[in-house]
Length: 302
Ligand SMILES: [Fe+2]
Ligand SMILES: [Fe+2]
Image (cartoon, rainbow, N blue to C red; front, side):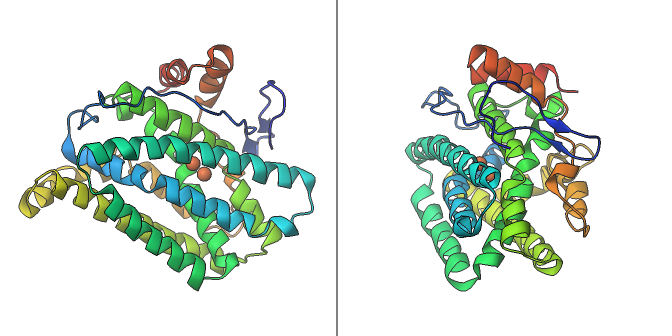
């Protein structure tokens, strides 16, 4: 639910967990040319994979907004309407921040325009060829993944240890807000668009495939533009498999919640909010500084 006062009172009845949404605008992460090219531990593969993930955020988020707003006129519940508005405003802010970073990648000589025009074609295909119901189901699936970013990157200290602090700060803010609005697209899909179980499940399967395909294809393009040969890129991929999918892999924590999404009675609120979420919110509300809030989040991490 959208929060209109500063009292932090998350829903937690033992079965459902949901923080309130807060719209934080015009945050300054200090993103500029001094961010190292390989900002994740000096590691080209890991950095470019994260870059590849973030490159598609602004257009992806505009797509999510379009897919959800397609049902706005059918929403009768005023709280749900407020939630859609807050969701839209949060996603718009994410788009602005990630566009700023995309512009820095362009300055590094990365083929961002090419990647973005291909991405636009993919989104146009979704919007033109698929029904509004399937688009909102796909959005709910993608939103399930972004809601898991907080758990994957920030619930444990070691995952983000090698991140540049400014990048870490931006990703932490984004991850926190994804957690806050994780139910919005899902509720529009279920309560308003009346999407049934099979379409929801098919959308998450297709959405998983599309996410992986787009992320790895774009990551490979960025590494190619950095001058790495095909052989070098293959070697990097294999070498980093444990970092991605090992026991402590960054993407390994996505597996369990992905299967949870397949359960007929699934709802995002049934997944507990990341344990250190309150630390970020409390520090941000106190100082208004996303960098300090990020530090507080990680100080409270396992
Ligand atoms: Fe977002
Ligand atoms: Fe989102």
